[in-house]
Every structure is written in C-alpha cells, then in structure tokens.
Length: 78
Picture 1 (cartoon, rainbow, N blue to C red):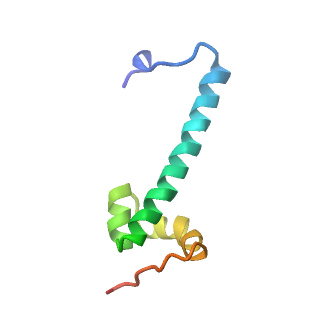
Picture 2 (cartoon, rainbow, N blue to C red; picture 1 turned 180 degrees about the horizontal axis):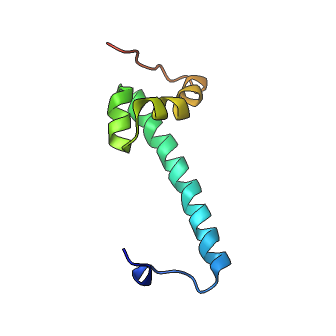
C-alpha cells in the first residue's frame, strides 16, 4: 500500500504513538488467542501455522507464560 493511501495523524509523534499502541494491542490479542487455542487443545504446529511463524518461535514466546498460567500443553505426538 503506498504511503499516500495510509491515513496518518499530521503530527509524527501522534503517528508513532499510534503505532506503539497498536503493537501493544496486537501483542495482547496474540497472547489471548494463543492461550485460547492451547486451552482448546491446539498443537504448537497449528498455532504457528495460524500465526505465520515457526513452531519454535511461538513456543519460545508463549510457553513459559502459558505454563505459569496453568495451561496444560500438548507434547509431540499427543
């Protein structure tokens, strides 16, 4: 998408603040969605495919938080 078609606030500080806020929101949404999927019995490969990242990347980013939250994680072959 050309930059000319992207709606931006006139002030660059406001535009950058919006980007930062969207990144924080995206991270929270990802955390919640991954937890929901894992609680529903999804495998790491299913989650990674849905997110468009490697299984290793999604595991590294989310496993400790999920375990701490009491989520039972599937092991390979389960």
